[in-house]
Length: 452
Image 1 (cartoon, rainbow, N blue to C red):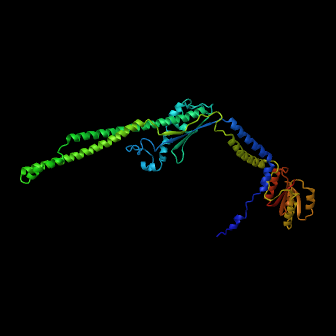
Image 2: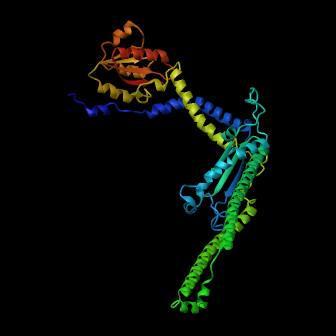
């Protein structure tokens, strides 16, 4: 069984030296400012150089609850309200589900193909210079719907918003107008075809019912029930005469036949009357079918040259700020890692940032390691005051950094090491080589002190 020390996970703490990060940024302040200004200037210039695009908008209200085919007005017509629950369920839901069908109709080739042809939307050279095999041909509905056009059903309403963006404000206005007019025309045509179909079916049923009524009228037999009231003598004689009994039975049979014929004729007459009422409604709906249940709430507007939607100067400036910050950060990281001179980011975790001002911090480190042999490896000239003070400490060995056997020999007996370096002066390659060599020798660097 392997014993696992869970506390071991916390032995290696994640430390972030904010001072080192801030000093790294501050040392690159000119680089940051230059990158920042370049990016803001670039994005600001793009706002004036990039092609301007114009956004034309329109809102359509599709009336699904107030048209001549609704059950409240015409109880004999069935309106497709969308949704599997049928007409009543759709009505309860407000008819919003049916707008899915309306959006499909609006984006169908029945509408869009006409829009494309009316506005002469054709394939052109790619980027204005690269030849295109389809050049001069009308674009497809699919291609049109992929770019710069938007259809949206506003949530909880029967309103559909149309948005179209183009470099030409006149074309943008014309395209939206074409979509509206062709969509309304399609609606009228669908209404007309539906009403004509309804009228034809009802009219055929009405004619059949009327013919059946006439047939029953012509074929009706028997006598009315009132005839029995005048046959009292025959009824009295039927008690004594067989012939009177026979006459009375025939009379009763004829009265029953007459009653049956009356009931059948009444039923056929009711059916004819009902179909006649339906037919009247169908004729009225047919006459009204040329009207549309689409109301334009927001008319598309012709835009002037300065009323473009993009590029936006404010948005471009904000983008310039964001990308300027990102570019500056990458520039700082790149400069810190490729600089030929020592930078803050190259230093280790334990740093004395100013040897002269924070000399007491160094003394604390030395006192804490007074029982060990400590070598101070210098990369730059040490201030004379510090040097003279350190020379009085017995366990200290001051060695000039060098890639040589002598250097290795002088630090080989040391338990701990302290590095004296200088930002923007010490050669970064030489510094990395010395640290790498010390790591190979398994020497511990307890701190790095910066010489101004």
